[in-house]
Length: 110
Image (cartoon, rainbow, N blue to C red):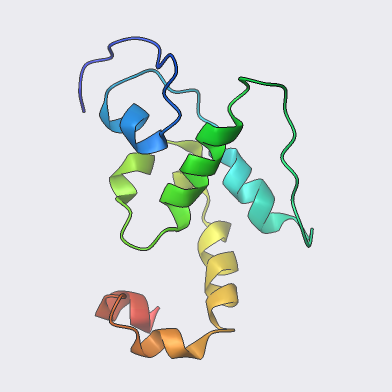
């Protein structure tokens, strides 16, 4: 990881912040809150310049196929063991994923 270079003023891209060595206030607990919540729809309201776009970028990096897991090393979400169970249960609803070429053999078995 790069040396800390300062505050990411105007940068709203999670990957860019994490790989660029900028300071980052860990908000990955939001992922757990969204997965554990029973809401049909989630509305993320915050004042201007409060990190909504950065949070959406973080969520995209977490859930998108092919994203680099190293982006989350050392962050709160990596300490959550229940997340694997929640996501695993959700994947059971989509059995066709077992045949997907976008998953590794290990991912398919899990």
